[in-house]
Amino acid sequence: MNTANHPFASKSAFTAAFREVLGNPEEFTKLKTSDRSEIWKDPDHLHVLCSKLESAFAGSCACGLAHQIGRSAFVHFLRRAQELGDLKDKNFRTLPGKQRLGAIIERLDRLVEEVFGIPVFVIEATDVIHLQSRPAGDGHGLIPYLEAGFVQEYFHWASGGKSHTVRVNNETPGWSVVIDKKPLES
Image 1 (cartoon, one colour):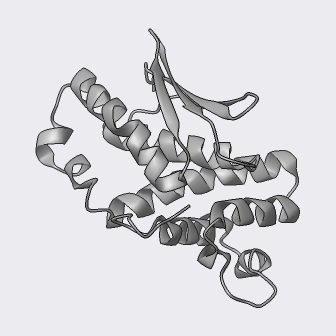
Image 2 (cartoon, helix red, strand yellow; image 1 turned 90 degrees about the vertical axis):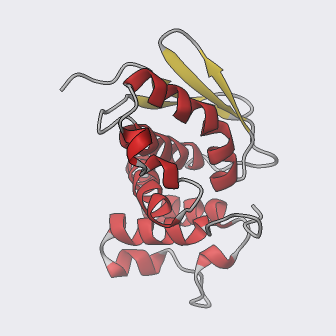
Image 3 (cartoon, helix red, strand yellow; image 1 turned 60 degrees about the vertical axis):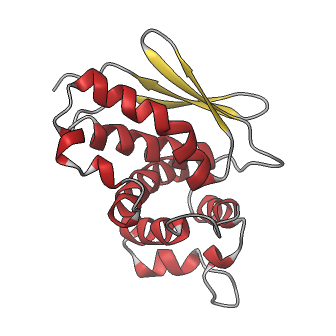
């Protein structure tokens, strides 16, 4: 993933998210390379990061942590990214729900591709939105969970705090992240 053209270094958002979710400095240290340099200096940092996470934690635990790290990364990304500034804008926040949903769906493919470096196709159905991902080369099995968490927090933020069900469907090749359009009732 080339971050040279990104308005915000997404690597630092994932670094902060890993520290926030893992909390334990000893666990975070396990996720560093043997030369003690941070793994995010590698251009393929998410793949390396997921490999380290998978080796430190068991299967479903690693998936859950990756999902939560993706949610946390969105918050860090939002705080620093200039191009997402309109999500914080009062004019956007006061739009009716359907207009806000339309606005966030419109930019979803570009955002996910920018952050994850993976082409995404948005397929809108009646009740759900599919983000069809086709990674170039060998994708890591935890990246879909990072993406799902990131997208879930994106929808939560943009919808004014409403939670949407977001799940991963593994497919060959690639995967899809499925978002329910209707938020969960509280």
